[in-house]
Structures are given as C-alpha cells and as structure tokens.
Length: 407
Image 1 (cartoon, rainbow, N blue to C red):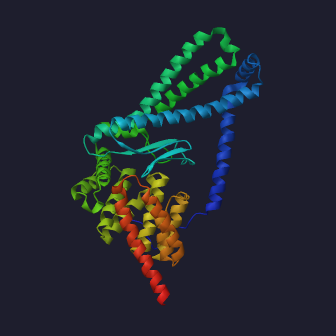
Image 2 (image 1 turned 180 degrees about the horizontal axis):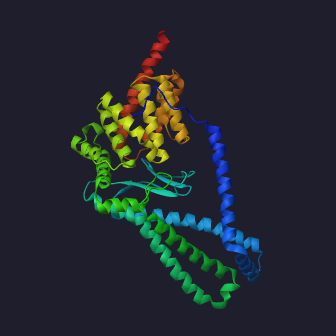
C-alpha cells in the first residue's frame, strides 16, 4: 500500500523533458552511426555506383533510403492496425478508436472525428474495440488480436512476391530506370520490414512502453490460466457497461473471479481499477481506498496513459471524498509527471482539485470542458453514469458558490 502521509518527492518536469530530448538526439546520431558502420566502405561504394547509374548524387540516394524506410514503416503500422479493424469487424466488435502514427480516428456521438495527434511514446498505433455481447469472447477476442499480425505478415509476403516478379519484368532497366528502382526496392523493403516486425510482434512479451504485444495476448488466450480469465472478465465488464449496466449492478461473483485470478502483472492493476469503479458507484469509501491503493501500487506495470488515469482518480478521491487538498494536488501533479496532459486529459481531476483548493471559477471552466467531452461519447449508456457524477460535482460547486456569496 502507498503511504499517503509520506509522498515521494516530485520530479523536476523541465529538466526531465530536456534530458529526454537530448537522449532522442543521441539515439538518432547513434542510429546513423550504426547504419554507416553496417554498410561499410563497400556498401557506400555500391550505393555510389547505383546512384551513378540512376544519375543522382550518392547522398541523395542514401537520404532517400532513410526517408523511405520511415514512410514504409508508417504504412506498415497503418496496415497492421487495419488488420485489427478487420478482425474486430469479423468478431462483431464495436470499434471505438483507430490510431496509426499521427492519425487518430475517434467514434463520437455525432460520428467519426479525425485529427492529427502526437502518438504516445513507444506506440505506433492502436485500435480500441469492445464486444456488444458476451458470446464466445475468447474466440472473438483472439480473432480481433490476430488480425493485426496476420495483415502484417500477409502483406509483407505479398510485397516480396510482387517485387520479385517486377524485377524479372524490368530486367536490365531496373538498374538505370529510377521509377523501376524505386518501385521494386519499396516493395522489397516493405516486405522484409513487415515480416520482421510481424514476427517480433508475435513474441509473448510486454513492450518498453507498457503495452503487451499481440503475441502475448494470443499466448495467454491460447494457454488459459489467470491472465486469460482476467482478460475475459474485463471484457465481460466492458460489455455490461456498454449495455448500460452501472458498475454497482455488476455481478459481485464476476468481480471476485476477476480479482482472484492474479497473474502478477499489469492485468492485476486493471482488475483492482474495475473493483474501485464498482465500489465507487456503491459509495463504499474503505473499499474504494483499498482497491485504488492496490491499483496505484501496480501502476508502474501499465502504459503511461493508464498511469495518468489512475493518478487522476486518486486526485479526485482525495479532493472530493477524503477532502485532503494536499494529497489531491500531489496526485494531480504525479499524473502530469506520468504523462503531460493534453487538452482532453484529466479534465475532471483538474476540476476536482481546483474545487478543493477553492478556485471555483477554474473548477467551473474544467467542468464545462468535461461535460462537452462526455456529451461526445458514442453511446448513451456510456454518458449516463458520467453525467450523474458531473451533476453531483456541479451541486458541490453551486453550494460552495452560495456559501461564498453569503459569507
């Protein structure tokens, strides 16, 4: 359990941001150094000869290869996530978000919204979907997960085959005709990149960013055990929420089954978070604190987005339930350190902390923003519980303003 009375010292945000930028530059320089070492003098001579045949400077060809690999990788990510979309549709899942690189599509009440957004560090793309019903969740979720690597490997193999056929078609012109050279090598590079990335994606492990690779999901679903039961349990709870069933009305046996199947990893954090949501809706303060503490203890096992979310909930609980302003500010600052807020993140927590600190106008501003966010949720069942929570908070703000006016 975390000791709220002795919080660890906050990290200096500006220094950390500067160090991260410096590290990124160092990695870029080191990467180019490695590439040049691998190519070697013979490789550079080969590139220069090829550039001469194509009547272009060697540095231009080298830069073109480097740029092309980056663009092809972005295409690979889009294809991979498109495979997850295909898997979701075949599994009859409801797609909520699609992101690939900087592109993010979000399903909202008025339809799909597209925007460009900086991707989370270490995450090329993601598709979020949920099952509208609980039929054969194990098989359907497996189909959803397998769609990504299947699309990556199949398109990679197809690109290599097509590239080889075109090489035979162009013949000697391949070495001197720029369009032929670009097309054949783009297909080759995309093919090998897809096969390598697709193969690595099937390794059952958690990435450095905290997200489980598709191979880990598939392995857990295939072999069974606690992790599979946790995953299917959470999918069932998501299905219930999608159907408009409030957390307090969830089957306690289902929740207990989720908590009893501990896998010792990030799924334990998610399990306690679901328990926290259940007891929060039932207004049982001691159990709220117990399961929120358990989730906080395990947050380091999860991606930074989940870490930020759990820390924001801790800030809200401290501000509105335990009425500890110092803790509320501490947890909100920790959430900002875990992942700097975008304009759409942490809105309710920021409103709650502003209220606890007596900044009522600022709290009103954040409340308006979070109401707009809730109104854009795609399903009425998703909006109902959030709206009730916001109405309760609005009542607190109104009472605080009335007391301020009568004082």
